[in-house]
Image (cartoon, rainbow, N blue to C red; front, side, top):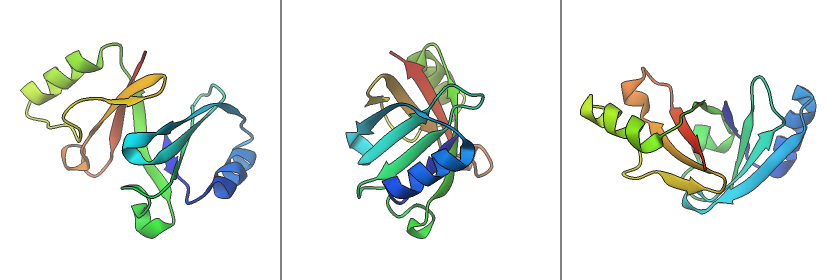
Length: 121
């Protein structure tokens, strides 16, 4: 589950509330966002702290639950299968997000829920 937090202070407060620790974090340039992943779950929680960019105005800037994520073995194959079935992903090509590659199913194809597809490198 990905949760957008307006700032690092809110992210740290949520980590404390959930009783979780940071397992890893990295900055995703494409989305201008620091992505903080908790220690292994279930569930693994990703806190997204935008530094401007397209996510800064999510939910009018107050943040909240943004997406759920599924890990896949081959993001390119899954992307082709989805496109062949008429689902256009949000990005034309997967985004390099540090130790993972990602893309998103648009909410128009999932009845309003953003679904992230994650492929570990």
